[in-house]
Image (cartoon, one colour):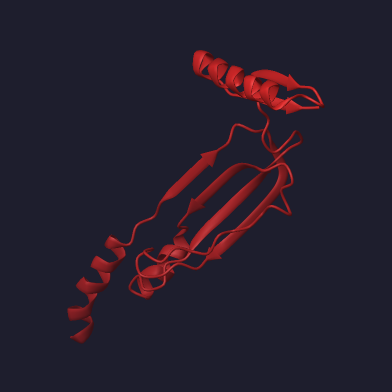
Length: 142
């Protein structure tokens, strides 16, 4: 008889616990290196999020794809703990080759030994070009 009273409460808890999947892509070509953390520890309905996942040493070219989700097992554990413990799965796919932040657009070269006035003029020219085109302009000091 007691189980019949608790059953609706348990069913409501299962219905209120939700699954989600978020995927962020950076536009970089993915590599075969994948870092998977299936049990990132969050608490209290996710109000206390998991710690940051640091992948800088494994992904020297940055990240291509970052996915977060609550798997079925994560959701089951959340429901069993009444969402006090809310784990999630975090998967990072590293980027292949290239630099960590490739800048495409115009480039202004400031030669070695330039005066302060020439440096200021280069920065001014770069900012005006960036506003005009809406694209970044790189200033390279040689």
